[in-house]
Length: 88
Image 1: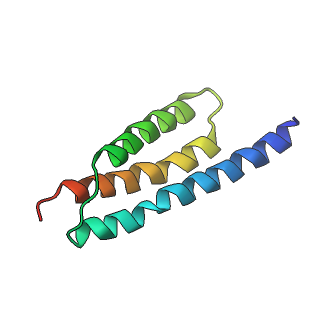
Image 2 (image 1 turned 60 degrees about the horizontal axis):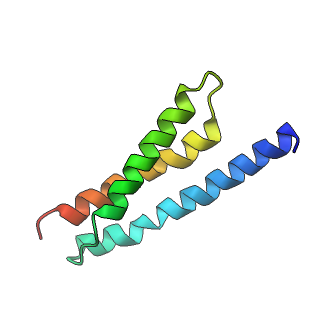
Image 3 (image 1 turned 90 degrees about the vertical axis):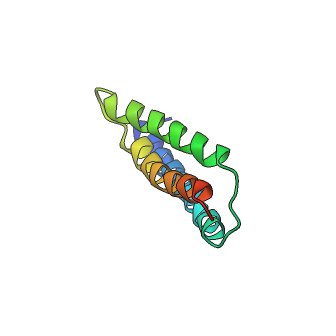
């Protein structure tokens, strides 16, 4: 596959990953309304996204699509985690 095609696929994959992390908004809403969900999935999401973001930004040639896809996962995963463990 040509470099330009790979770049396009990378950004499309990044957009779909961001959409996946935006789905945490509903879980955060439920957590805040007194119906907390599990802490395991958001905790795993945060760890995974921190590792991928570190990998993407530590490379000599930074991999911006990977970083862009995972930074929202860190923020939304943390929000879901914190709201799931807060006292009711």
